Length: 96
Image (cartoon, rainbow, N blue to C red; front, side, top):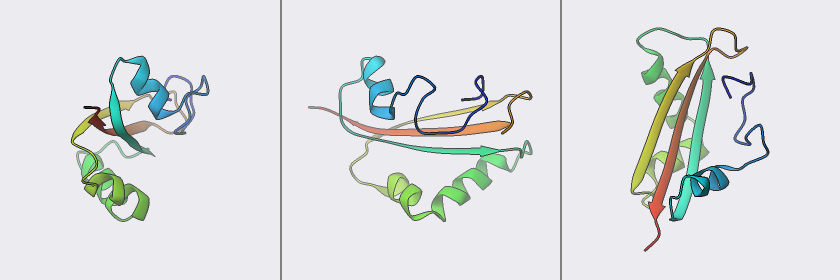
């Protein structure tokens, strides 16, 4: 997203989070994603992102869902992007 200057759960190639997780060879039974873009570069930005997610019903549901047992977190700041910083949280449960 940062490199291509957009913000969406759908990748620039049309991929879904499930497709991207599959492409990495992860076999899952549950998968979900939270994203947030912000121009805030302060040390408080991660807490602000978390607070925003917790105050949004669907994002809070991902954070608290017992269906997920693993999480991957990422952050990047791209000065040339119209959005600045990007937080991504991917949630999953491996298939048995």
